Image 1 (cartoon, rainbow, N blue to C red):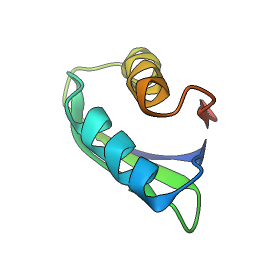
Image 2 (image 1 turned 120 degrees about the vertical axis):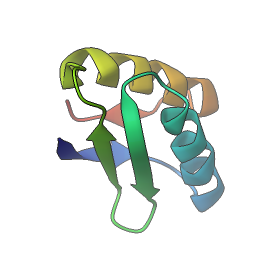
Image 3 (image 1 turned 180 degrees about the horizontal axis):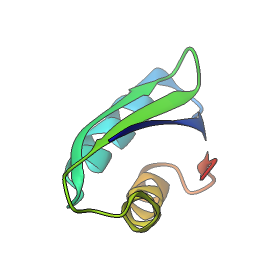
Length: 72
């Protein structure tokens, strides 16, 4: 399953770091963060609940940028 989320990210470097962090989360098959469009596209692995996985993704992204917000 693939979903698109609005994400607040301040710079392209932070977007790259958040993308790397998201791709390390269990349940994320592939994630892309686009700084220009302020969007995050996440493809979830089979058998994982997107809502639960996205809480972990948000936590990981906030380690990069503490004020990060993702529209869940």
